[in-house]
Every structure is written in C-alpha cells, then in structure tokens.
Length: 68
Image (cartoon, rainbow, N blue to C red; front, side):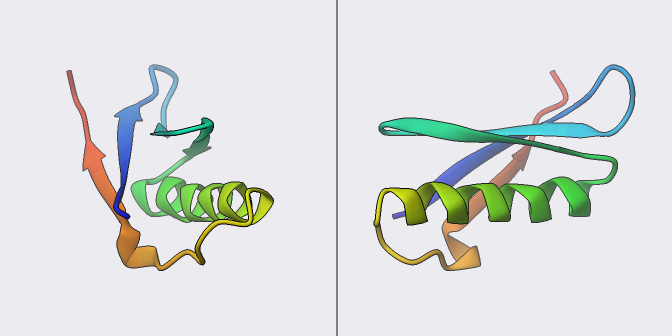
C-alpha cells in the first residue's frame, strides 16, 4: 500500500510533512528535505506498529514536495 507524503516549506525555514492515512495520519518536520523524510519514515513506522499493520518498506512512501 503506497503512502502519499506531502512536504511543504515552512514559513520560518525548513519543511513540514503530512501523511494522511485511514485511522489518523502522521506529521513531521525538519530543517532539510532529507531530515523531514527521515522523520516521516520514523513517524509512519510508529503509526503502523501501533496498529499492528504491515511492516514499513521505505519504498512505500511517495514523497511529493508542494510549493503552492
């Protein structure tokens, strides 16, 4: 199951991301794109672990940077 992650620039610098999912979702922030992606990977892994869902393969995260 692919998980869409939307990444947006933060007005104060850095980035924030959201991954809406059934039953909730995840948010993360970071100073760089790489950092926000790593934080989101951790957040989604915790979310899936709590729901005892499938194991997270990093390829499941579809990152999309939004500048609008």
